[in-house]
Length: 374
Image (cartoon, rainbow, N blue to C red; front, side, top):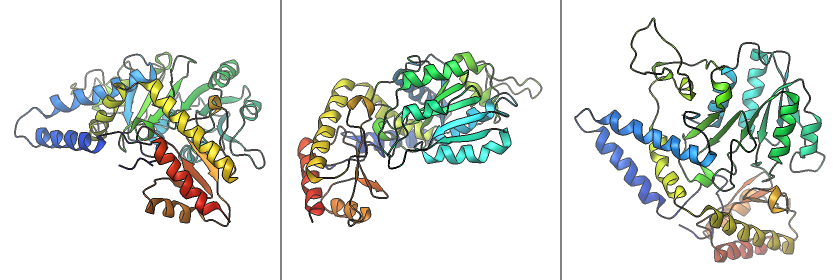
């Protein structure tokens, strides 16, 4: 693994990840392929351990977190579980810098649920939606607001406490997508108290695809009726009486058919690793390297598309590349030198994590400077 790995906004890495992942999948293959009846007794406790690890990250109460394939599916199921007509005639509020998949979902669900989607725009030439602009669009007619804790395109971090407090005054449901900072920045579903949260185990959590999660406040769960139900939606999944179905009293009502456990099992080793780390030290390491990147960008004259203040950003640094240097060309040249980064349009995204070293960061900056020089 290169010491110049800057893709924690996409796929997180940690020492020994390949070995741990191979071991977890090999053990699953052994148990699942064994000719006895021990499969579910092995798989379901591992899925629950995955959920419990996420509960610890969120400081969430028991039976408030469950698994989903991804953030979009979790958000979809939450929206579909709201009481009929709850959002009818109201607005749903998101920022233009939210993860596009969430926006695509809301666009397609607006007509079905009778709400108007309001997308708070970026100011001319800006890289992120300003908090005050979001608040200005947030009135009492907003039935639900989806907050993006940290933007994937700028690493801008919202003032979550201020946002949630405003949402409470407006009487809105308040949810937050924490994907771009979960596992790096501390997060607590109770401080401030949010109605729901969605995330994935990729990125700073270093997990695998398919290991998404949904948290729902216990205040709300009993009032929600997920559209998709099945045998695992019940308090007792082994109830076979088709005349006696009732949703579980807790987050399990968001489960449905036989749960897909593979992604949770594959990601559990990463969550176990994460649980054993000094999280303050991981964040301090990131802050040292991101400060180095900012200083290097200033020397090169590359515009910074991320807030400079630590408290206003996540763990990534986004830089604007000159138009004369096509981003795919820059990313490809870095890759040849063993430096992993990516780009969206002309925005170079750099996210240093535990595998990234100061020497690797300096090597990346030197390689970038050689390309940037006229």
